[in-house]
Image (cartoon, rainbow over all chains, first blue to last red; front, top):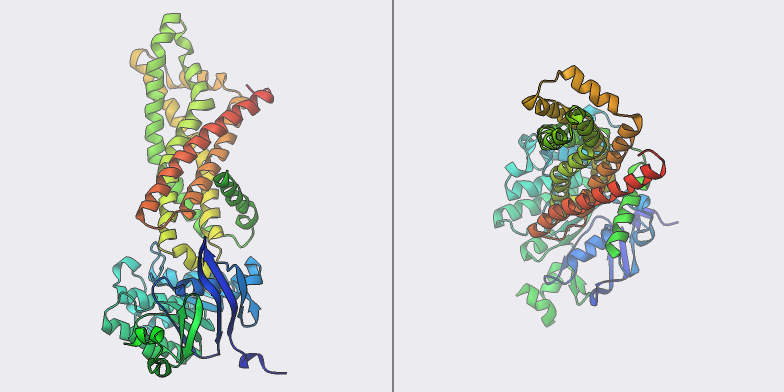
Length: 247
Length: 246
């Protein structure tokens, strides 16, 4: 029997999602191999964020299936979905840090609710380690409102990583950041992926981010996976729909 | 009808998701402090003024009929049975309903509620169940305290024009009150508190995108919970009548 960890970590088949009459995803297919970074490229409003929200179960697709570690997300009960979600990290474009909590409390929040037998010392150690990974240990007792945009992104990344997820979904991780901070975030994504052996889906239209982080680039066009390949392969394409992103 | 169905479904989740372990005791205590303790000054002040004004307004009519001595009895009954619970609940709806609607609405539009969901935590349990439980438990306590302060205000009101000892005033009030006056009044405040909490949370959770949506959530939470208070009050009076408690 083939070992489970050799199988793709995410398989999406014929995914359809619409809002009213507007079809956003129209039979989308994708396979993500373990340990790879897949970047979804597409125009604004093409359904990239909708896709990752379907993967995490925030949105319910009309049809199709999403297998994460062989569990069909679309067929799981609410409790089973919560269990699966602990293996998936999600970095929001807006960071979505809890603004009434300190940075420490933001990071502790998922830990204390999922690892119920964890000791106080262990919580403190994991929170400190997560913040050290993003070079922000000194912000531990600060409020999110006291941090800059780049720092908030790094704290959000630390919170995303704290439950040691196997998969991380990044929703436009460098949007709104200056080029230097964007580069820092990209390096952090790569560093944390190497350290924790995670697989990722990154939504982006920042071509520097795509180039630096992608093992595989998927072009989402008209609700379908229009093209797929390495950054270099797609950059050399003569197809006008692909070329417009690389020119 | 669609909205009614959604509110009913949202309320139903309190009895399914909300009461399942594991309990968010720390957050519940935090909410009881914010919702109960921090509301006390406002409720205390308004109750005091209400008792004082009610007494001063009633006094001339009672003097005309020669039943001025019945002033503590009338004010006591009015405050404990009806005015105290309803006014306290309306003040509570204005302060707490809008605060819950705006806070959760803001969390919704900034994706903080989604952030809880994607980390496998049920936001309903952490955010809604704790707040609804806190409003349900705190409003009866605030009403009891508010009634007491209101009666003290009334005592001062009586003493503006005549002289009555505090012992005699409260003796008259308590002699006129029955178990059937106090208990239904307190029980209905449990329902008022539940309504304020559930409506505030529902409006916050269903907030549309943008800052305008947050404002609408806060406003409609106050309007709907105030209407709900009157509807529950109407039902409560019918039920107590049917039970022969009036």
